Image 1 (cartoon, helix red, strand yellow):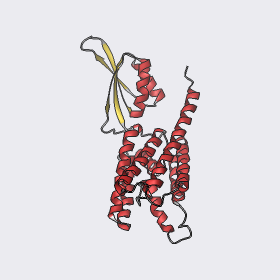
Image 2: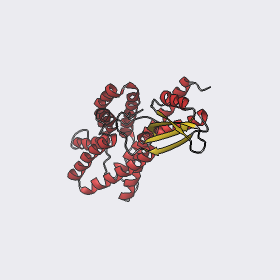
Image 3: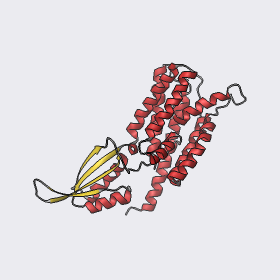
Length: 293
């Protein structure tokens, strides 16, 4: 039999391992491609890059202080997240923030771009950032910054999403890049951010909501599993099959695509004869919890 306690410990270790690998990939993208190419990341990473310019002409100039600035900016954000979202997601977020801050400071930054072509370097940098960020979400981690702010704001204001908050911050970052440097730097940085977003959307299943319609005669068992294992609700309807004339139950639930993949495996055991229809939810309004972990 499956041991829930051991399973949760194993899952926790796996998620932390994924977060470590994800952080390394993300920071490699920043230090090996974005920074040597003179580009700027979005979110708090980009803000840390801009703030590090203040060290020019000071004793701090020879040092890579971006990681330190990134860490300091995230301290109040983690405290806010702890109060609103609870301690569990913030423990992993804090671990990831510390790790990424250290990697940003310790990983070497090539003096010249590894890839000479500016556009190719931009795409590769965005690709690495996207893979790292996407894997981080799979491990139920968070790099802090706009991720946590977006989750907190979406809990308070239903019209806001993580994507909207991130977009607002990035507009400011890239507008500053265009003014302080030149439009070319801003354009290439936006291309990198766009590539990063595309990769994240392909990987981050927790961010995509789906509606699941399940035709079954074991509606109570499946409903209980949904409630107890992924902490979602469901609604049960009664219907009649056109061909058989037999009464069947229709169970409807909205969940993330990641949660659906868990349910799919459970359905094979709970009711192998169940018929499920799954389709993307264009929008989810009302009391639908957006989860960081």
